[in-house]
Image (cartoon, rainbow, N blue to C red; front, side, top):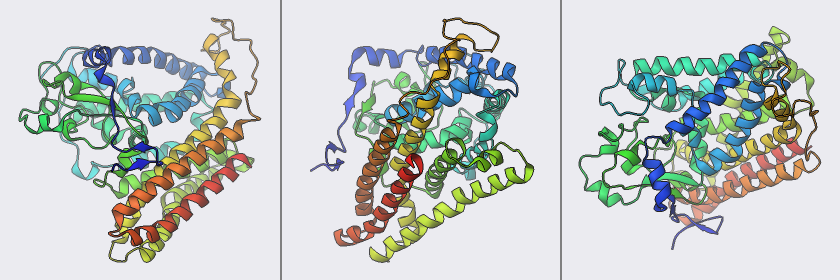
Length: 467
C-alpha cells in the first residue's frame, strides 16, 4: 500500500503533463525556453535601467525595486517554487549572456563550447558556497530593498559573475553551485508539485548512449551536469529542457505530483542542505523583524545608519542563522536519538530531520510575502506607468495613490500558511522518522522531540507575524 502525504495524496501518484501533445511539442522545441528568456530579458532591462537611473532615492516608486522585491519575490515564493519547482531557473535571463557566449549561438546546437571548460572544484560541489553567498547578500537587505542603485549592482554582479564562470568552467556551474538564489530554490523545490523525470527507467537502463548526458545534434548535454535518466530529486535540476530535446526515445516527462515527495528520498542528504534549511528559516525571521517589525533600531542597523550598528546586525544575523538556530535543532535531534535509538549516529538524525524544516520554512516565506504583497502592491500600479520616475503616465495609473489591500485579513492568510507548513512538516517528519530508526517504537519515540520543535517554531512564527 502506497504511503500518503497528509494521509490524502499517494506518494507515488504522478500525472505526466507531456502526455498532452501540445505540451510535449512545446517543451521539445528549441524556442522553449529561449523565447520566455528573451521576454524576461526585456523586463529585466527595464529593471536595470530603473535601478541605475533611480540612484540612491527611496525605492517605493522605483520600477526596479517594486518588480524585483515585490512582484518577482512574491511570485517566486508563493507560486514558482512551491508549484512549478525551479521554473524560474528555466526562464531566468541573468545567466543567459554567459550561456550564449559559451555556446556561440542563441538557438543552434554546437558540439564544442567556447571558454576554458574546466571542471568545477570537487570540494565546492555542494550548497556551502551558495549558503554563504546568499547569507552575504542578506547583509545588504537594508540597501537593496530601498536604494535602486543597490539592486542594479546586485543584478549586474550576478550577470558578470555568470559570464566569467561560463568562460572558465564548463556548462552552467554558476547556476548549479554559485548563484545565491539557486540554493534555496534547489532545496525548496523538493517540496514542489512538479518534477522532470524519466517516464520509463527501464528504457534508460537499456540505452547505453545516454544522449541526455552527452548531447546530440538536437540538444546540449545536460547544462546542469545531472543524470536526467536517474534523477530522484529536484535539487539540482534547472528545468532547462535539454533532455526533452536530446532523448531519442522521447522518454522524459514533466509530472504533476503530491507536494514534498523529494523530501522522502533517503539519499544524498547532507549538512550543506541542512544548513540551507536553517539559514532560510532564520532569515525569514530577521527579514520580518527588519522590514515589518516594530523595532526601529533594527532597521537603522540594517540600513547602515552607523558602522557599529551595521556590524552588530551582520554579527547577530550570522550567529543566529549559522550557530544558534542549528544549535537549538541539534539539542532536539539529540533528544530524538536518546528516545529513539542510540545506535543511530547523531549526524544522521540531525541531517535527516533537518528536511522537516523545508515545508515550514517555505510557508514562513509565504507568510512573510503576504506582509509585502497586501500593504505594498498598489505601488506597482504607479511604476508600470512611470518606470524611470520621469513623469510619464503610460497606462494612466501613475496618479493612483498608495493604498494597502486586505491588511485586516492578512493575519489569517499568514496563520493559514504557517499551519499548512506545520502540517506538511509534521507529516514529512513521521515518514523521515521511519526511515531513520529501524523499528516502529523507536521511530515513534524519536519523532516526539522533532514534533515539539516544529510546533514550537510555528507558534513562535504565528506570534511574530501576527502579534
